[in-house]
Image (cartoon, rainbow, N blue to C red; front, side, top):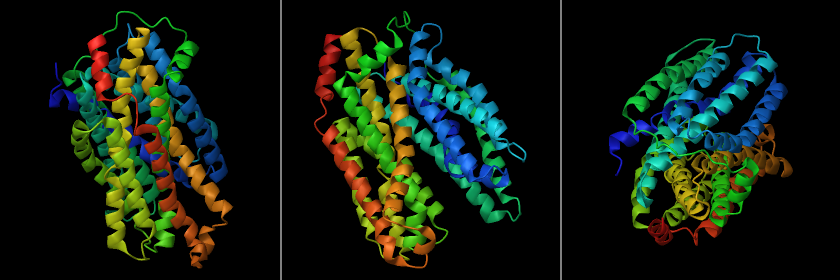
Length: 436
């Protein structure tokens, strides 16, 4: 039975507060704790690096835990179970009073990451199980992606409004607490809607008896699975490198001071608008080919942006909207394809480990985002690009321009190689359904 639009919206709505949380953790919380809370750059950098390493390693084990307990706790249950520690961690991190404490920040950051993982893997795997056929999975993952992007856009609007209309010396503190309050307000509203209006998560007859390491090994032995998570890693790298470099490119190279946040917001809004378009396109084409088209469009936009003249605000707006428009789909489509990979694995082994498989996608995308920062800073340092010097001398601006255009092109080419002739297509899916 096909899911109604109401059911899809109710299922996806926890994504709004969940993904509203992620942007502050990348952009606002680290400098807030380094400066306002007095912990310093080195300490905060170390804490967030260790936290991200823990987060990446813990994701597959969270997926394995869900499969071991799936007869007792449905995927919807994990969203609810993760919400309480997540809310407490948000309160402790966003509303802490100075001076800060490195141990306390580290502890609550780990709690937040673990709780977010449970909710995220639960949400995506539940959406996969609820969707009925090849195209409905694209629609379901698209609706979840729209919810996620809506949360991201919403939380970026809050500091922009505060900076525009509030005149106070404590604007950094007000900005952090306003975002934290918005997340804490949205979370119970979203969970209530989800609990009463979302379709019930499907029950499972018995928990998986396969050992955790054997499950990991079985997943990695699947060619379709390996190619998909590799592609998702490079999708994350496209986003990560461009996010890491946007301030240098916009404010130093293009000399558009104060416009980096605006262009980032426009790109995210364009992503939100682009998802329905690419869902429609995936119904006409294969999902993997639609993914290839999406990343190729981002590469073309990035190349165009890299050639812009300085102080070209309108062209910058056009390029970032063009870059952002397919990015939401590029992040959504691997999750729609993973639902088909789960079916393929179930046909071979007789066991459907949805949470385990989706936990790897959580890992690869976050790893891509994290590595994106490291790649851009490493290459910039290797080419001896110095931001302070570059504001006065444009001789090293070619380094940033080369990364803006070249990195997305290289990553898109790798994704194209991995996914254009992807073996798990619509015809293969129909054959699997006939066999099951």
